[in-house]
Length: 178
Ligand SMILES: [Fe+2]
Ligand SMILES: [Fe+2]
Image (cartoon, rainbow, N blue to C red; front, side, top):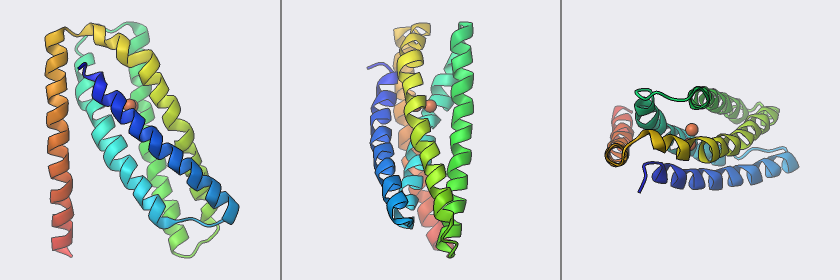
């Protein structure tokens, strides 16, 4: 398997979550109410899976390796855009958490903010994923030899393995400190 294999598989799961968020937005619009539990679950998914696990492998491994290659101006431009888009998505998720907090504290009108921010994410992810899947991932594989690709894939597995242990160690540490 090429290293972009797992990344593309992860895109498919992210798309499923985006679809659920889309449905949730419709509900919020219809009833002018937010479901904080859904938002918490979606935020946890985006932060842990879409950002730490997925963008993590893209930035810390794939893009890091690409920076050592002589990229075409177009590939370099796309990579810069992708990095900027990851930063932007993190900001929006942070704002979504804030809006949800306001809502939970009794500011009912914050539901509008929640809808707007969630809509931004729902619009963003499919476009970002499309750019990676269609314009970037496959062509940039040609910068790597088969051995380099194999090494990258191994590093991906190791990255995921480490992350899951980190995540649950943190959960236990946080609970122990309470
Ligand atoms: Fe990405
Ligand atoms: Fe991606």
